[in-house]
Image (cartoon, rainbow, N blue to C red):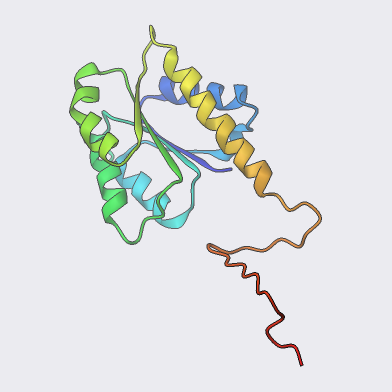
Length: 166
């Protein structure tokens, strides 16, 4: 499993790492980006199962965070042909106004936003639930006595008679 956390607040990154570890996932599965630009580069080069993105995020190093930086990043992810779209995207923010502004863009893409912050704990529970789901899916994908086959789509046809019978 691979997780990308995009946040310029080290304290929140530490909180996310703790939640991941509590879900039974090793912290080595986590990579961190602090700007939208660095996240896009990482998403071009790697495939992630989960993207956890702060909504108030700087576009580039040296720039101040902007209120819709995370939502802007998610839009770019979905518009770009060179970016590998993560299986799940979760937005986090301690800013209620940023949450309200980004709600429509996230919900239109069927992604969720959680209110985080010192007095908020529900986001941790929901993130753990998402991680448990991902871990279960990953375990179900592991081969069980069959040779591992990697494909995006597999068609299996059941013919009433063998096609090449004599």
